[in-house]
Picture 1 (tube, rainbow over the protein chains, first blue to last red):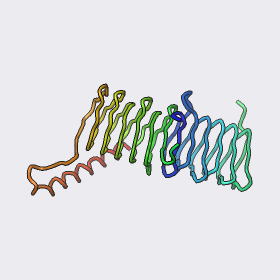
Picture 2 (picture 1 turned 90 degrees about the vertical axis):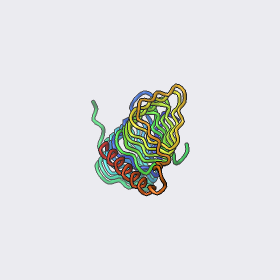
Picture 3 (picture 1 turned 90 degrees about the horizontal axis):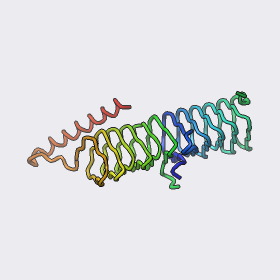
Picture 4 (picture 1 turned 180 degrees about the horizontal axis):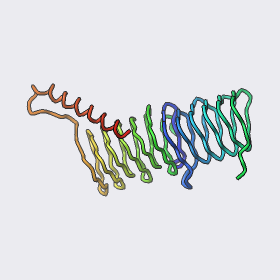
Length: 109
Length: 136
């Protein structure tokens, strides 16, 4: 549990969160975040809001996002509200998700 | 996982601002100004910045201005900066390199000057605010 970063529902965080070290790599956001987030696994729960950029390996979104996501695999669940640009290789969108913006494949490096 | 508890994991590095928090546990690195009810800095945790909290438990390292009702410094803690507290527990082994101010009751010599002490508190409070704003 100590290596999971959990942001609880009422909280507002503003800034940069970097969770890419070997010790821990998962972020669960239930609250509100503004800024830049880097992690391996990111989960934005239903009710969460995010403003900014996400760089991750896998991302699951159930909240409201305004911004950009760059991730290898992305899942937008039915409660997701997304506005911005998506860069991903694997994409799943559940029925009910609202998505507006651009979707493209990750560039091969 | 307690629902109202925010955890900054061991591999995480956060820089910025945290507001509207109730309980925060830090195992990673945080550079932020925080107002909360309870803040725990675990052994692997590092915290830099100002803290306003009812209870602060430090096992890791801390640098900054802390204003808290209760402060508990565990044996593995390393603290620098300033602590303003009402009650403090300092365990053997804690490394303390900071200014420590007890403000449980800032009594003036006579009770008639109680209001003056209130003013002093206010001034102290505003100057704290200024400090934290400069840091932010």
